[in-house]
Length: 260
Image (cartoon, rainbow, N blue to C red):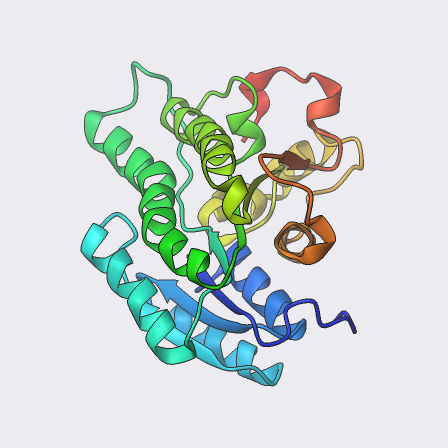
């Protein structure tokens, strides 16, 4: 774990913090001094992450919530501030993957993906920004995907993640003068619970790895390192940025039909 303490006594709220990228970011920010509110629809997963946060010597809080509910997200922010007294960093990482063309995607699946992957980010930011403003500024790091930067066979997923990219830019412009920086990371293929059906199959995993010039999938911890950088004062003059963290995938100009 890093020795630097860039987030000493700061507070971060992470949605989807019960597993995957959210959990890795929670552990990384805690290792650098942050107290962490872990928000997740699965309370058991959030509790496991809180234990990992506390192993880093920082305070953890479990907030059970549905990120697609305005009432739940408003409560999650309020509980965070009530427990820790402030909010400095938001990482709204809750989301879901999905494949399927426009023709094959049902209206129900479209609504599920767009609500989780786009509306959930909107609601988290909507209620977090007023509290971050009160501290004199802070950082929001959203998570889109390489699928949000190029065409993708998952119509609903690609549309939602592209929405996150431009939502990020819009918020960055709107809140720059308030010292609230908003940036976006676009991961390549990362083995997390939501895409285990791909990476647990040896043949499919080998195909995915070869799609990246570095010849492997990334790790949640590598994404967490990018989150920590963009959320820290080391990125103090960076806002509205969209950062691929993808092992060189986008640099290849690869056919979008094979993307995640």
